[in-house]
Image (cartoon, rainbow, N blue to C red; front, side):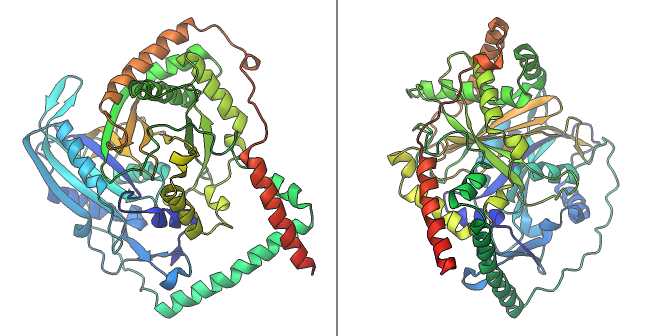
Length: 510
């Protein structure tokens, strides 16, 4: 048995009818170099031979009665690959837009909890348009993987392991022998849950002992300073994106050459490629919201996940990430200067040097409490009544820069989706592959209207940044405005935590 971390379990508890918590991928393959089209049966045989590289593909959840503890991953004794696969043919008249519509409907459906949390739909019979050429011999994979099992970074690693790096099809070997471990008895599960509960008071006792060695405020300050929060919570502006979502989904994507982004980086000087990507997203969002009649006097705030995977211990699954809140400077009219401001904001938060793994932040906050807090945040409509914590998530995932293949069919394009949360009607995932970067917009069309316009807005935004970058004079870092500070919600939270800590210490003294 392998128990889920608090962070992994929280994605299970956050799931609802309108918020399925899986990561999605749409992978388009050009099979024109094959002698004959790739049959679905061949794909099934190929996948069977590769299951051993991703153990979680044959593991399901084992819940603990009464939710006395986090679930476990256990081998599924009833595993059948057929329960995780589907075949769809769009016919010879199928188009890429039809494929995206199909993917939107498939990705709206939550994964079933009585089996390993993944599903792949093999889509045949659509026309692949690439560089002005059309080829009917194409197929696609629509992949769903639950966020409790992977994050966006490990998801890319999994697909890299399942695919091949050579255009010559490798012989499909027989599956490796696999014998599932026996399912643990209810008695063992309850004993393990009891042992975990006994360890919990020891954690709080240890926390109190450490607190006694310093003043309460000093200890809390020490911990809060590690959090990458460069400005007050609930300081993000209200926007049309932060309303209650429905179950409807729409996938919009735009691909650009990485060389254009690298040229902007070289022109602007002391910025990173990630800053440029965020700058393109910010300008696109600014133009989109302006078209919706939104006041852009206040800057949007993004939540940007950061992988904190160790180079010496890289796990293929699970969530190993931190996150920072980043001011996108959308109130800056010059899109090139905005990228410099984004860089300044990112450096000020120091997330890359002192990023704390998110599962460590949840060590003393049970996943059930985290999920309850998120539900209350949604049901009490805090984002609408007051202000949201952030306006949208933006994730930038580096992908392979060499071509990938599946039995001689070349992966030519991929689109990636991420879960939408209540009051978060849009999420952006940027993924690079073979010298190109795709900006993927997963949105709820009932919240983010006219989402199709985002593709044109990306192109016009990038062109505007290129033009403004050439006109922008050199700018030293100290010329940029300093972040303002003052009494914030964080100060009030600090005072409240100090009082709680002092009361706790008094009880231990008596």
